[in-house]
Amino acid sequence: MAENSVLVEIKDLRMWFPITQGIIIQRHVGDIKAVDGVSFTIRKGETLGLVGESGCGKTTTGRVILQLYRPTGGEVKFEGTNLCALKGEQLRRMRRHMQMIFQDPYASLNPRMTVGNIVGEPLEVHNIMRGGELRERVQELLRIVGLNPYFVNRYPHEFSGGQRQRIGVARALALQPDFIVCDEPISALDVSIQAQIINLLEELQAEFNLTYLFIAHDLSVVRHISDRVAVMYLGKIVELTDRNTLYEDPQHPYTKSLLSAVPIPDPIIEEKRERIILKGDVPSPANPPSGCNFRTRCPVVMDICAEVDPEWKDIGGGHWVACHRSG
Image (cartoon, rainbow, N blue to C red; front, side):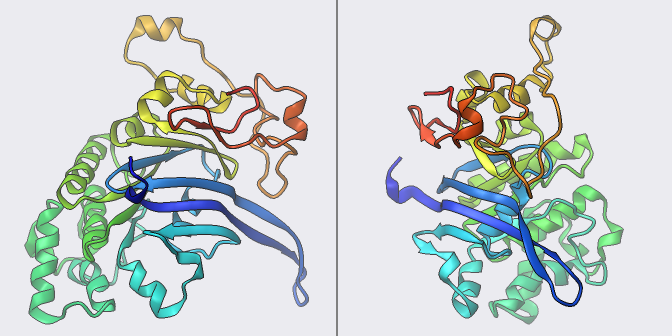
């Protein structure tokens, strides 16, 4: 792909949350390294899947890209503009092009606001339209996401989980953004509803030429919706490549262990397959291990892993890995 097709570029992104002690006089005694030196690009029109276990920094990465958290260090470039250097009105104008679909459809909608007010709020905040024009646009957005346009005067508690997530999708589409962070948009929904929301997201992407960062736990869903997949562990990305290469030829030991846990609907293959069970717990992001973050649980650990943090390198064909054994 041509270089000019890159929409979002992340360079050495860090988000450290300070740990303080004391009540009146607070002392800075350490940091929780939620995101620690992450670099990747997202191309126009593609879906980049971001996977990893709970607490690895996936959601924080998405929020830092949108500047909901201001990063500790690094760069977030959107169409060549470094968002970390923007403030006030400049940043507000850029926010029109980026939106987020939140994980919990029950918590992300204000229960005191009608659906019409929730979906129309971004248009009012950015002074795009008011009155009858706004109402028509809101009804059109509800129609686009598969809801009855006459639901505008209803409240969130009158809807099911799947319908609420559709309202969240309609709100994200209101400003006609180029880029949407989908933060585990289906994890709180029933399995039967998950497929409907995934199909809706794919249809919207094709219709409006959207670019997604799709954050998820479920590797089978990520394979279905993503063009490329990034695997995250304890604040760092350990592997990034296209979806077929990742599933057929994983290079990082953590990726291999994640994939070994995905059930295959073929009893013969499932019986022969080797499961990789990781020992121990994930280390604390406040006190990560020296060298490679994964070394304390890695089944193929070497002496060098404790001393040197593995280099993030391309081993060929856009397959990026951070492991001393690869390449």
